[in-house]
Amino acid sequence: MLVNSLKALRGATLAGLLAAASAVAAATPPTAPAPTLRYTLAMPAPQTHYFEVKMELGGFPTDYTDVKMPVWAPGSYLVREFAKNVEGFEARSADGQRLVAEKLNKNTWRVRHPKQASFRVSYRVYAFELSVRTSFIDADHGYLNGSSVFMYPADNKMLPSTLTVQPAAGWSQVSTALRPGAGKFSYKAASYDELADSPIEIGNQKLLEFTANGTRHQVAMYGTYTADEPKLLADMQRVCEAAQGVVGQNPLDHYVFIVHNLERGGGGLEHLYSTTLEVSRATYGTEAGYKSFLGLVAHEYFHLWNVKRIRPVVLGPFDYDHENYTHMLWVSEGMTEYYSKQILQRAGVLSRDEYFGKLGNAISEVENTPGNRVQSAAEASFDAWIKYYRPNENAGNTQISYYSKGDLIGTWLDLNIAQATQGKKHLDDVFRLLYDTYYLKAKRGFSDQEYQDAVATVAGRRFDSFFQKSVYGTAPIDFATALGYAGLTLTSTRATGGTLGANFSNRTGKLLVATVVRDGVAWNTGLNVNDEILQINGAAPSEETAKALTDTPAGTDVKLQVRRDGLPRELTLKAQPSPDVKFTIQLVASPTPAQQAVLARWLK
Ligand SMILES: [Zn+2]
Image (cartoon, rainbow, N blue to C red; front, side, top):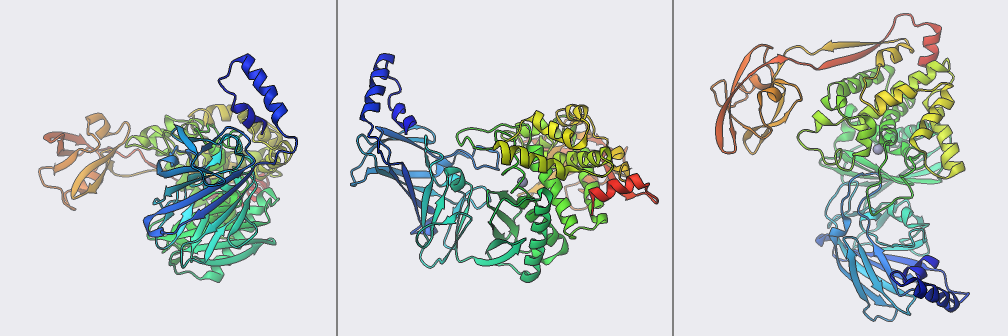
């Protein structure tokens, strides 16, 4: 309230400001009502893809109030400009008089309500992007991320609010982790952060349920799918219980999975007390698809701790107006990816051999990405807003995923902590320490230095050189030594055959260059992305002739005629040995007791 009162005085002279401030102080009644905020969400014509939002604000004794729409959704590090979908913004006094509202910038509206502490705002949001990070509504269902639909009073982000959802005609379910309020489809949010971080599914979704260590978990299934539901719920329970075992403390009394079963899908987004998963409706039908679904469950569920509560200092409370920069998405995302495999292994979904197979693939993927030698995990994190979320054709040459690299950093640290403590400690203990120290006690996130200090406290030794060289720098990670601590060998096999160092794609009947690999033949010869392949060794592209592009012995010349900017040109590329390496991991025949202790701490 103080902030609101003083804000109205911005721009005044100092003398005027002081006089006005004392006048405000004198004029403010001692029993001014506390501000209140009520949202109503309606969707009377879902087939037109609009949500209708009403905000009723009370106890705002100021001349004006700024109302904002976030530019991004927490967990998805891209400025998405949600205000672009807003239309029909209108403000009225409590008695229905139209109030002056002006737009100050792309996502801020200033509502002038002099002498009227209560007023309301209404607007529509076009919602036709069905992803876990955005909002969508059509004749079948509605789904929303709060940050892309609900505005907030700029200076009252921590204000509790209520929400009443009015489902479209014929819809009988609302699924959200928000706590119930008074009345059907009414909910309470302790702050805007909670409202923004509690997605809502509205429609006729199927509701399933399981209990994990005594906590109720709801599963809201949108879309048709075929699954053995009792088995699925039992497996989700095992995964959630294994995830709860990592930190050993469950911060929740309820949790909601919203699952979108679509023709194509793949991805999830974490929230305070819930997650949204987008999967192919066929995913439950194959062993690989089923395990990948459980891996997604494990990843998003582990975020309940890592990033939602154990987090870099800037990732909460959020600044919804700007990019929130951190060097540690390799912790928040990469280690979550690491733990998704760890959790599946602990839950019995992955055998040790399957785990070794996945780890070998993960090492191969990172080592075969040229960007791994250009961008560090810390840089990848910091630049997620402009690089990872906005990849171009050169991304593989210049970037490394903080998911994949962070996964491997997690592997290296886990093995090194176990080695340094003779198998007594591991990465779980780092997460436990961070949870206690920063989430429970300090009630804040941690700095880069504090993260490294926590690792050192658990391990009893520092890893400064590793962090500096291989996390904040691009020096190779010595996996062989780390795996050796657990009695494992890392074998690398060079790919056989030759390569032109380019990838091709068929688009609208044209064979085009899709990517050119750094330092390869195509890179050095000057093949461009988007060059259209007209001839391969003098013949038109066909399934047969195109084999020369991907499967040519090293040393062989491949003559290409390409079209670039409408004109033909000839290029000859001499295939080179493929630089790709495949890594495999195996247990030695007779591990030492020390190796056995590390392995036992690392894997079940
Ligand atoms: Zn994640």
